[in-house]
Amino acid sequence: MNPVDDARDRPPVPEDGHGLVAAHAVGALDAAEARAAEEHLARCAPCRAELADLRAALADLGSVDAVAPPPSLKEAVMARLDDVEQLPPLPARDAVPPARDELAARRERGRPGREGRWWAPALAAAAVAVLVVGGLGLGWTALELREDRDRARSLAAALGEVAAAPDAVVVEAAAGSGRGWRGTRLVLSAEQGRAVLLDGGTAPAPEDRTYQLWYVASGGAVPAGTFEGGGDPGAVLTGSPQDAAAVAVTLEPEGGSDQPTTEPVATYPLATAA
Image 1 (cartoon, rainbow, N blue to C red):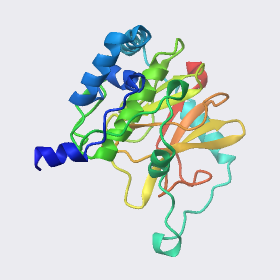
Image 2 (cartoon, rainbow, N blue to C red; image 1 turned 90 degrees about the vertical axis):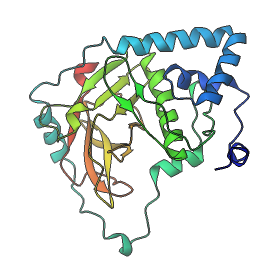
Image 3 (cartoon, helix red, strand yellow; image 1 turned 90 degrees about the horizontal axis):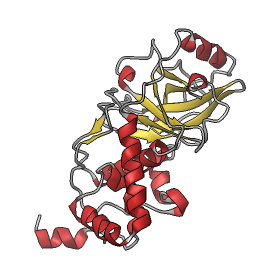
Image 4 (tube, one colour; image 1 turned 180 degrees about the vertical axis):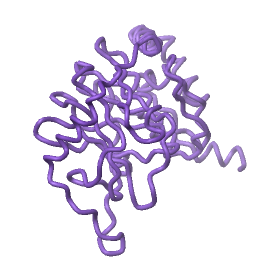
């Protein structure tokens, strides 16, 4: 592509450099955005302090011992899900209107961040640099599409903020979780009421299906967002983990379900992480 045309197609770097701090902390900005962030940081002491705090928090995550799920966790989660009415799978795609895409809806609504900040669209359809979070050994590589960059930046921003919480913990998938899910991690803060799932080698969801996350409590399972797996770097869970005993992941029809229709492929204990 002609460099002039490419530059013309790029959205402008946001003037509000505050909104770039969290993404800059985890290296999720391209060169132009990083320069804009550095220029802003040079004249904004509060943002320099915030950047230092975020980087320190991310570094600390590498030294946090992931919570080892108790052997009985999966059985306990399954017992609670057994109390939930199992709905039949949705009809074939051509028999029902296409479900609203969760990620597209989230992009339309914008991405509010800390204190109402928003994350600017990507400057170009370029690859996101490899991102490794502390000693977890989890990273994002070669996200070449602009929407992937936007999603990665949103995820990085949320991760930076959750990781900065004093009570941030890292939770491993329970024993018995499906192949590929044992490398995933859940980073959460009860104080913030937020949780972020980081992929660690899951396979893509089958065609016309999606992975759906659930908060599992005594009253049943509450939807917490969807996740495509296989190259999708992770997901910011919707809702709050407060009062949940675990997070579960099931395979659902595209667009998600109101209640789980399959058994969990992965579970993460929250009660022991509190």
